[in-house]
Image: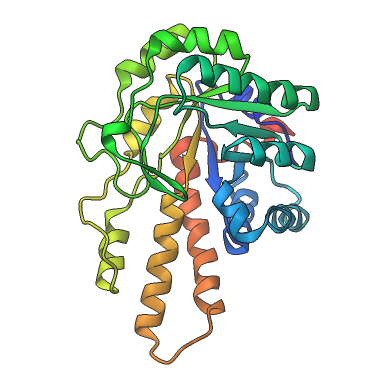
Length: 312
């Protein structure tokens, strides 16, 4: 059952968090829907501009529609992540997305407001929610590449003014996370002082954390043992930080890197251990099975496991 992102947040605020999972291939879609139905966990499925260019938007959306037929007891929303105007216009006109994100965070505040308002004017008449962003996350993911010097924390003094002048439905904030596998390189972790101040300025308003994979160091170790070259100091957001953040109004947590690390480890180990094997379907099937286990851990951590009934 596809529902609005806004409705997901209304039920979740302050109690649990909705995982927003970035997908780019059918194995990820299959594993996500299977896990959600098995554990009755509502979720947001996200496509990025890079994923849409890789697999084509029509193909990605048909993966999702097919999965919804195969797993009819699933509660989900469809979202475009880090979209620019051309991607968002296409997403809105497709009729398949329940929410979009306009990423104007690199612009000055007033320009960010202007661009966000333009998207909202197109989306809201079609009952499509809009996620905006204030602050700039560092890191590398898809076509995003922001070094730490250009990363900026969200200024809590701007958030009330921004939301009032845009009428956005949720706000992604920069409070210490980053994209990719090398998070929190400064060792500071989440800035709960900023989250607390933002919640004071925006009570009951849905907050979004991007770059929120946990980064399992055991996965990094196994990838490197299978020939990978990831840095051993990769670090993500901890389970304790995630649970604490929910109380500050974090309703949506973006997860992408953890799925990619799992994929990388499975495929590297499979072809290392099966010399002469060429069938990619075998590790693909293993990936879908292990993805279910990974997602169960995420659902449990975020508290959305068993919450699908709230939306039916």
